[in-house]
Image 1 (tube, rainbow, N blue to C red):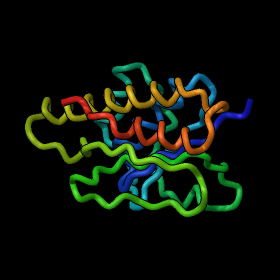
Image 2 (cartoon, rainbow, N blue to C red):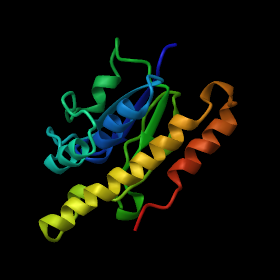
Image 3 (cartoon, one colour):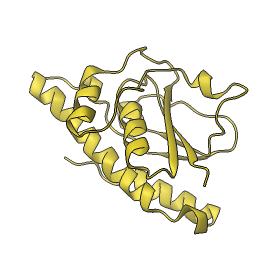
Length: 166
């Protein structure tokens, strides 16, 4: 079975989309191949994203901050699903992907923008990890092959509408 190709998009591609990519590749049971990218990538993965992933035994070796241009060229993997993880509430501009992949918005507050003590900032990354882990668990449990497009779109949007942990 060919895996479903999934792209997680954000602006900076240093935290949320990176965590989502790593989680889906780890938890996806071989059914998914996840990637992440940004419209304006930071060029490096946030160290706290790596720390939280490693603390949860999620592989990080292949992670890197990259431009979404890599996925818009000839020879790029055919993307079937795109999830934006930017936070509209914080007035972030989410990238828009051209073409026809199925899309959903899974907005989360940017942990890289968290302020406070080092512990407060790390807690922000842990919260994002936990929320993405719950959403990815829901995605992985979907019977993708048996859902019609309308139902699938509704389910993907519903996953993104779940309330983040306080």
